[in-house]
Image 1 (cartoon, rainbow, N blue to C red):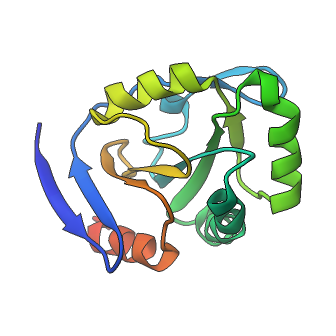
Image 2: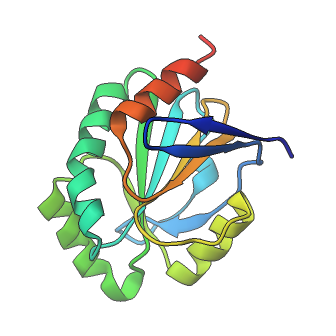
Length: 163
């Protein structure tokens, strides 16, 4: 496993080569989906783990929505995964409406998502928001816990695009 450090102004991305992992979750209508279905399709994929009670998530969702809308037809997409589980599904839906979430989002059980997160990253899940960044070929390129600077994300993608 290759591990190198990439830095942004405030961000610290740990760049690593990990195989895509079939993390499982559901859409808000109850249909099963996997992470592998959403990555490696020729676009960068920003996966954000969020919760209905996360104040930083509420602040960042409009910025992520804007990023998704600007990039989805070009080179990148955002995929949301709520850690709220079925017990707080209605609160998660309310969060999506309140925040104006404009990117696809799913919901999973924290216990299962945390175990999958560990298998993907080798790190314990530490809370929301947490991000995984996948290359267009589906390679895990970075992870971030806490607030994300969109400008640093865009700079990282631009610096690592092979086009």
